[in-house]
Length: 180
Length: 306
Image (cartoon, rainbow over all chains, first blue to last red; front, side):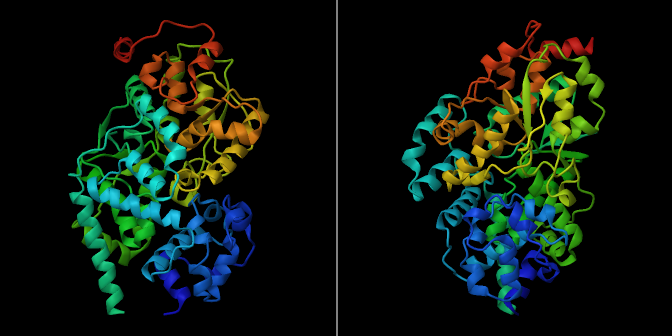
């Protein structure tokens, strides 16, 4: 299976429909920080440039605002393609080009495994600790705390249902991967 | 109509004022909502970034649970939750093999799941206009606001099926019913940077600066939002924005539910107006003409019943 087919399988998108009008790049709020702009990323996928795509900062900087998807005249969903590329990069063990983002997503899901829901202050605190931003954010954390907007962390007892979904979903995907 | 309520994680933490104001507004309007029992997080962008199937099955677990409870609609005030719940429903509707996997993980079939809606959809679509107009107790005709819709109220249109993705109107309509001046501006559907506030705050400060510049140009007193992420980013980053914009910035950021509730005479505490970083109360008091006696929500419910 080519790289393009892998992305298309995961995202449910046909990248060959893209005719490079670049409305996605023009509207993307994160484009100025991306190495590959969304339209370039779409084209790179069609050219099977796996390393270039999976090592790009673009796939990690996408915030999923859906402006690209909303404006695409061909009804392709670049945001879904970006998400698929992140999953593929992780599966293939590619070092994330913007590591803070992957630390956040991983930490978020790990927090869900404790309680099913996340405890937002923990996710924020852990992310900021691991990315060296905790000290800058402490004054704000205090302001939120005195306004009653930081609740105490719950005991990690409620994640049973989510843990079941997590194990089962990942097992199905792994099984399918191995059979391939 | 039997409404289930899916608060989402933010409304139990940093955005508790949104939860308080929505619940009291619903109470006042006679919209009875029941919390979805033992709901789990929708997974937002994190779960689908780890695994495709997990990203779809996590929101759908909640939808399936809501179906079990017999809800007609599932109301989620967080626009990111609404988006991920609606998107998961759409994805399995379009994709047979994915649906099979989802049902295998859930251990049940999705037959007739309830429709997921944002509170704005209920208030603008379900015939509340005369009731809302009737309940106005404070004259806020001097308050000028811009409505900031952000990303997921109406975008992408195929998934959200609500309002106009490029020029949404629902909040403008609602606030118009209670007599607030809503201004035209260019920032309505721009992105605030969402969760990047925790990852790359500089990016969020840049994106928020553009939103505030547009709001200031329009002459607004405040920005009104309908998403906890938008609120957190705009309300909590103003000290840094003051440095960036080179001018003092202290612009209240309010939830639409707070403005509606305030116009309808609810006490500020019943709307969480005391919990913001940028205190909105001085502005509300200044702009409120013809102030009425504040009434607690239970007293108002009795008043409405009579």
